[in-house]
Image 1 (cartoon, rainbow, N blue to C red):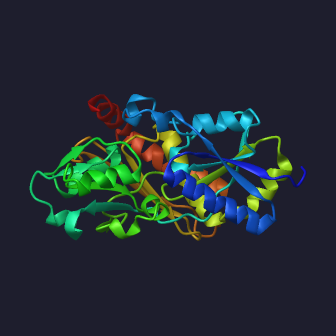
Image 2 (cartoon, rainbow, N blue to C red):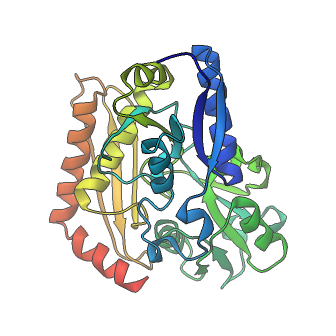
Image 3 (spheres, one colour):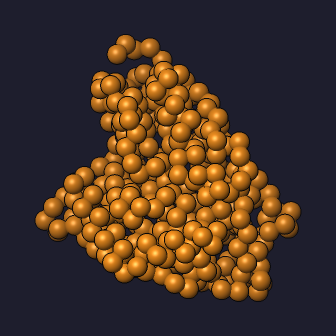
Length: 313
């Protein structure tokens, strides 16, 4: 591998460009390599349909991976929660940088928190997981499907079209909209999506030197946590738009809690566990923890609940 400028592929959305620009800066800082960010249009960017209607899993990642395999870019940066859980032929996960805030956030007018919203207030969210959990907290509210970048969604609150929206706090911060947040939900109130707040850096599998170079960006604790979360999602046979919440944290031991929700939030199946206390947060232990909690949820009827939820969307 020579020292030519690295071409980093990114979705064209403002949030994606912001996070890719930050990763590019870190790559340059750690390796001395110059990085050019290349915009790649994905199916998820051009379609206004709900994610579950256009395939959900991988609609943002597919075009970036095609650009990698086609030699148009050398590196691709994704929001980790958008990545399919299965392996991609010819592509390597080279790095998981330190995870940012995984929590969900509310943005409402006049600084309102969830408890302040009027009965029957409308909340915009494109996530069945967020909708189910907010209805568990306030069953009198009405969740409305919504797509678009953060600015578009916030605009619907400002205009009065919606009373509030639910978004990932990390995404709002990356977009410069952190000040708009009126309430942040702790994981015991609203479990995040698998991998939420984390980024994935990919390269071609045969670029071993580049993969080793990019590996310097990885945070081992973040890698272990998201590996456990995505292992659970894969073992459940669920996609990235499924109504599944999960959060892993810690190293000795790695602990994780997970839940599968019904459409209106009334039905919920929960599981929690930890890797052996004497073990570090290794990749193998993280995989095992995810699979064990998934098996517990499946035994409790998670597959049936996910099928009912999917048919209702």
